[in-house]
Image (cartoon, rainbow, N blue to C red; front, top):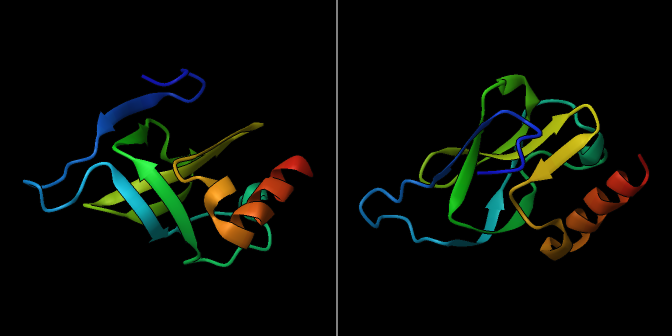
Length: 107
């Protein structure tokens, strides 16, 4: 359901008749699609650690800051004003994840 801070829907990832394992657990590349304060000094195509079975599809596509590919293109980061959300786990994503956390703390 989500918290309702950013309009959209949460739905289970389509595993395409068991072609993709759910929950999705592991490392995936992220594709940064717009400037984001939390991705300062983060390279596009960096690998982040995921553990999830659901995806968030925002109503307003302009809030999408990064996507990943797993069964389809999945939104993995959103940013709207002072609201930030990630589908991946920055705290488990090594040095790059720690940089994202530092970027957030520095806001």
